Length: 306
Image (cartoon, rainbow, N blue to C red; front, side, top):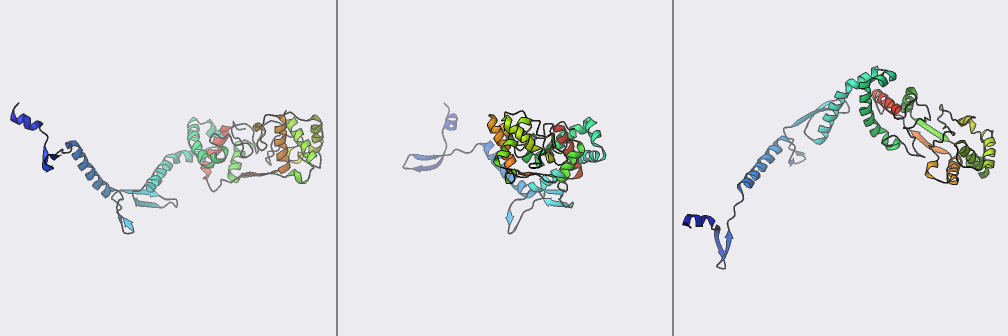
């Protein structure tokens, strides 16, 4: 083997030695790694120049990159790059792209919107986003609601009416449902009779004798249930009184129990304790008229409307 080849295969050292034979090898970093390191250093310097970076006293290096956006007051602002300014710019851009559609919504009637395929697509996307941001916390993401708390918007049962005008009215002004607690005015036996009568109206297992007495009580001046729920117990949409004959439950959590006794007990609890939690806020002033109109059509389509 030649001397040159032998030297190339010999491990190089730094020339340092300890205890006679303990040497320090000379293993330089790979060239690609060194260049990559230099590149990261150069990249860091460029990044510090372009974007906000080092703090200086109570301020910081703002960087050369700027973002122009419109704030909530409608003022145009230019700011050093940051994620908040970027978000506001993106929101401005999204609003600008949607504006022609919202302008079209504003100029069209509900019937025209429902028949326009292009607008239906916009309602589906924009309405879904508005619903998720403003309505889903109560009515759930799909609009199915929560029994004993929030109405189901996907069925065809409407407390205040399911027409475009009624849904729009509900969104604009909100709603406040109320039912007095009958435990203050009726005896426990009478409340039990009313509960069995309501169970009978919905085809639920009940005590026939108590239901018959409850029928009389329902239509009497003592309980006067027919004032709100009407004499045929089908409810009144003008005041949001539920239909008691359709086996669709909002306040009494009847579906949660299997036995007839449990269902009657759930109805009895509502009659005895009353209701003062059917509150929906008014969205006028929180959402623009165009957004409320989009939500009106979206909710109308969720439940089939009327």
